[in-house]
Image 1 (cartoon, rainbow, N blue to C red):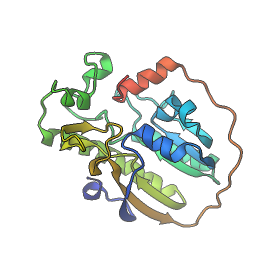
Image 2: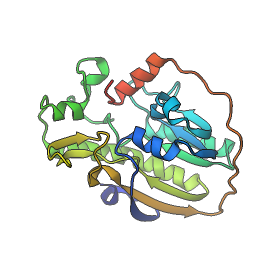
Image 3: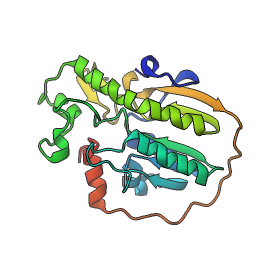
Image 4: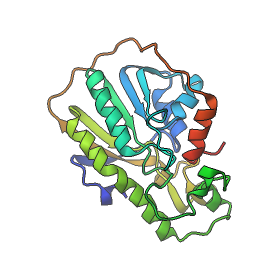
Length: 248
């Protein structure tokens, strides 16, 4: 889908992700590593939610999903908001690597004219679309699902391109995991939806790896982590995760 829809500059390859879900990806790449040269700009609360388990040694984390980055209408963080925070981080931390974590094309589907994917945000439904599909509680044409999923990617790509133009040095555009839309899983050959942990099909772990170089290269410096970590109310974190379609 990325290869078909992306018009971003660079050389497109693929890699095998170290997780089929965000928490697995973060644990594998951030856990027990010295990342004092890295700033994480994220629209996803999973690192904060699992910080005691993962214990990331980052220089700084910027939680865009906290106020004021959260969009109540859509129940997610919009890509233009991520870019705004990433641009400011690039200026403030000019000698650090940036990991910029967009939500899209991840659920929820913003700007879609469908209703079947909206109910979990206001309590009408206990689960998101993927959970309803795997339990047989929802019947939706796969072409419809692919369209709104692809539209969610299209919603983000222009903002990714805007950010790539400004970032100096090497930028890689990738994903923490893929998504299954009714394909058969392995080793139990059932139809799978979403991105469950512990299932490492090609649809879930083969991800795009777009490499783009923008001169000049930057000098990267590792420094002690910032100590001004804001404590965020647990109820808010749980609410954000629910809106993003994560089961409790």
